[in-house]
Length: 490
Ligand SMILES: [Zn+2]
Image (tube, rainbow, N blue to C red):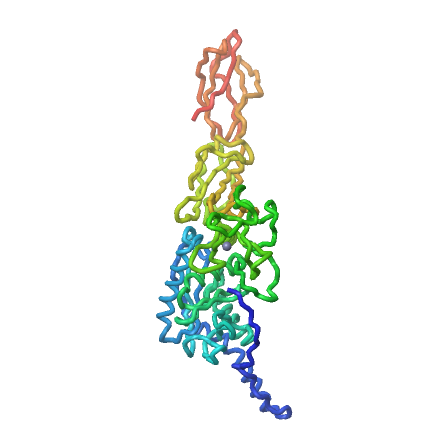
């Protein structure tokens, strides 16, 4: 919901203190001290008054979309009701796609902070409440909720500043702050410009809150026809002025037999096209589907808005939670098996696609979270073992930034074993001879001899130390030609 304040209220809720006389230094010093206390007070409040609760935990905050609800207009006695409202709110959000499918990608928390009075300001009716974040409904329609800095109070520290301070204290990794306003009888939502989604707990809070998350998370635009004079003509992922089919940003969703622009008839009620009326214009601006939660309450997001939200989720949550080995560059021996594993996220009704690769070649059938490979199958020197995890959801057709794919790669340095060989033959006295045997440390061989290279006779078993050894024949040479070889032993 985006509406502009057309009338600036003249009501001042926190007028500046009257200054002390300029020549009264003592009074000035006291005034300065009071000012300092006033400045310090809001900074001290959150830690003293606020409490932090976990509503839903699906994994580490470092790799989840963290939703944080904050209480506005709840007195200390009403804070238990806030926790109930916040629980209902996260459940309501998770009942809408794509949040349902990606439930396990979300965590939810609540920051309870009391307000002196219950409710919120209604300037249209002359009602003002003393609340923690100083929220206010708009003075014209009485449906749009904002917090300072806004037309009623331009001081950041009175509203958004308190939100930011509480998040910094309790959940700096918050991705989606939601201010729940304790107004059971006044439906209201926030301005799409806000970094914080605001929603009253009044019916239909579920749809309003979900709509607001479209603004905050995915920068979705309103698909309303209602004029909004002066609103910037900037296109959003779900709004456009483009009517050339090939240039429409959501063309991947438009079937060839769907006309562009698309008539708003029942024949096209459930397909993606190019429907006139969006971005506060009834003509000249277009939206993807006839109906969408960014246009009216009571239904789902359209396919294009849903896609934008999935991309937004993957902009904050990566498909791979963790992997093993944690070290991605290490040495391996020539005769070991190396085990790898991934922890990947799990959408509700489909699995992420996994493919393991060695030296950039997919390994047939290696599509599980675990993968092992004997180094004997690798090349001497440097090898690359990698895994690609991809979400192949039908919700997304455009992913130019590759947000739905994540790769992890390990560099394996396999030490080349020293070559096994015999060399340096020497003739000794009395028919003796010797040759040198080289190979990997601790390698075991049998020394064999043959006259015809077909029938071999065992002469001796030898084991190398750290370097080559010399073999000397125990039996004097006979008159025939002989060949010698070494055979590695396990
Ligand atoms: Zn939409």
